[in-house]
Image 1 (cartoon, helix red, strand yellow):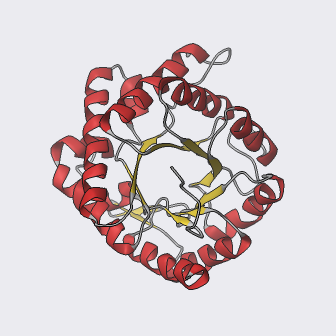
Image 2: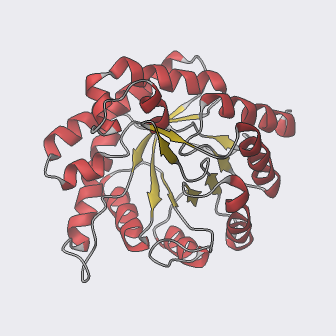
Length: 291
């Protein structure tokens, strides 16, 4: 599978959670639960992203790690398989080459010795997901929004151990250029190379402009490893039961263009982004890499 060859920039999709909230996700439920309660809504969101120009649709499984941590492992695995199948169905219906990836998020557990979760247990949690995702037909595995570099490494090892799928992974950093547990760009690249990830980078927390200097650092140190940027619309403010973002679509698109010019190999949208934004980024990529 050649994810990055001959594409210019691999275009991921927009935020699933944002779209599900707009579609009426009930309060107090996780986005992954919508796979079972409203599968046609999830499918519709995938198709909207594909029509906007996404090369990749991500399964609605970001919260599965936390579902498993709460002890609902059997339900979590069934939900994961169904979510991957929905993403595959959307890709098949698109009429063009679109990848359907298994999206894996952090568990939220604190690893030992500071926490109660062992490294072995963490690896097993991610292995179970990777195995189920491959069984359901995922094209690759995408680890995202990890703030703890040790858990990120566990996820990478678990996914690689349990499946033969390519594994990509991104962490989330703050404006100071560090993860929430203090990891640096050098730490991220070290883990990505040690665990033989297909690509790495950043997602969430930061807007495109805030992410720009950290991505520049990653690119300067990457030594050929593909780098992905999936910024969000900034930190949300909750008003009248809705998440509102200060960054405009226009500002996000302009920032995304800077990231493309900088040389990222993959780009997409995290919290607050929409297929409309993806559509504009598609235009930018095609304009730069049109043959």
